[in-house]
Length: 408
Ligand SMILES: *Cc1c(COP(=O)(O)O)cnc(C)c1O
Image 1: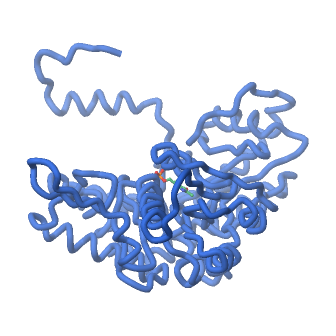
Image 2: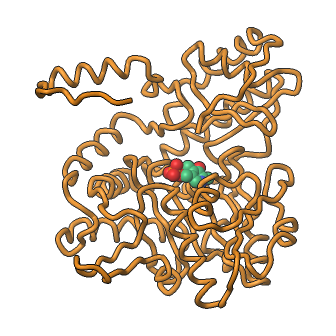
């Protein structure tokens, strides 16, 4: 909607008050009331994010020669990610988010197929039905067909994916975990398929890459899902999710520098001189890089293990509590996401009731279920959530909302 820019400026303190006024209707995430959109690792991490972001807010990751500080921080963050995910070579970059990481991995896979495998004509990718819409967005931009294959027990079905793949398939995808159910796809089987058919396997660990390694260290039996499996050629892992970094930060990784070279855009055919950009962005906010560097070093392995133990504790408690109320948890979630359903209740109506009590979570639609993406704060409010869930189950009765809420 068109609006005139105010003729005169306003003082910062008044503006700040007005902005906080705008936020009055926002969900109370600091109290743990939201289980989607925000990863709340507590006020200590939030302070580090903010101060580290502000320190490099004006600097630009587009210019590594001008800002060796950012280059160094990016290399270290990428190094930490490669170390956690068994990366065999130092090949990766910080991007603006999961969608950026996925888009750039797909660009690399496509260019690899065109140049190395001489694939011509229309291209496709094969993904499980639970794969994130970022793949469809990237494919819409690049005019690549997306083949979504049916799930088997909420997981990718390697046989269905094998049947859907052909000579024009530039990528197959597994998620670790998928967003709708929080379940890790059978990546080992997908790796075998990729090796057997010489396919590019991308593991989308956007929401799992910075939690799964630590949950494994905490004793949970997490099956191999990363570069440890030889068929995995690229991965996406979001720093701004379970890395607890400031928003605008993800990582994309490649098995080798040679594969990563297919991602990088190197251009000089204009009057402005040569411009090399590894990711989708031109200007790259220095703050997102510095905040990521600071949070990772602030937490360290021990810090992540403690924070993530609270997440998995909350997940286990809510799963058990929901089951005690007659819900069924979909699959066997091991990380910070879970979805649960009840055949004789309308989960979307329950969602709406919980919303009345200030809770904001996600939902799934196949089947209709309540969906939570948990943070350390939720260990403190799990009992309160379960009490309100019991109330909402009663209160929802037979009501049927007409449309699923938009949540992501
Ligand atoms: C969040 C997410 C994405 C997309 O990441 P954005 O940072 O929101 O762009 C992709 N895949 C999975 C599994 C995700 O959870």
